Image (cartoon, rainbow, N blue to C red; front, side, top):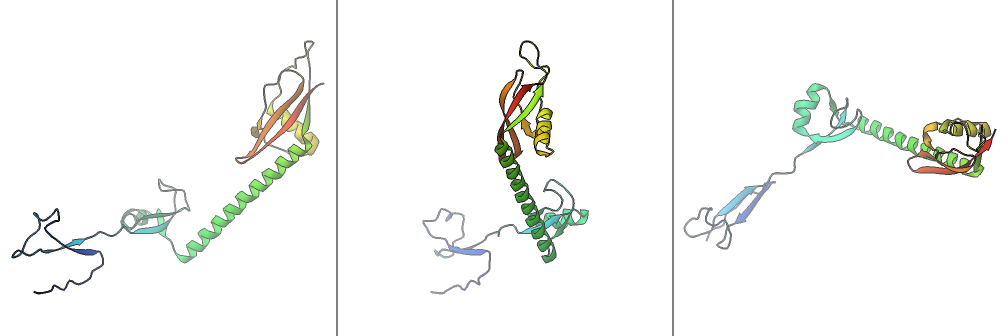
Length: 194
């Protein structure tokens, strides 16, 4: 009886073929003995982290993406579309990400503060000219709401954030303001006779 020494390679796997194996017919047999079959297992495709210098289908300018080595070497680098990530770029990217997260958090905090102020005040007054039948001339628009808020608080706001219902008579109505994707405020709008 003899033994076969097979050197160990990364990415290679050796298996013994036996009679119960499904591939017995296709494997060579030597003198009634089972043969040793060596298969090469392909490793996972290696990726390279790159920073995009220009916007493309991979992402926006300044984004860090993982691409295959070949794609980077043969297309992105020669075209000047990306550069490999270095320690300096990693630090800069991390600082930029932290600054963006801080800006988003500040934006949400500001929106929550404005929402709290609007709900605390609770009621804003708009004066309109009213006809004999109790209907107002024209309608109440978001710009009227902005003027009423500016008159009471001195704060200038964008009229696009207000959802004003159809108002054709005097009375009290509820208006919703979307200050941020996650921050909404509701307050009352009273329409009075001018």
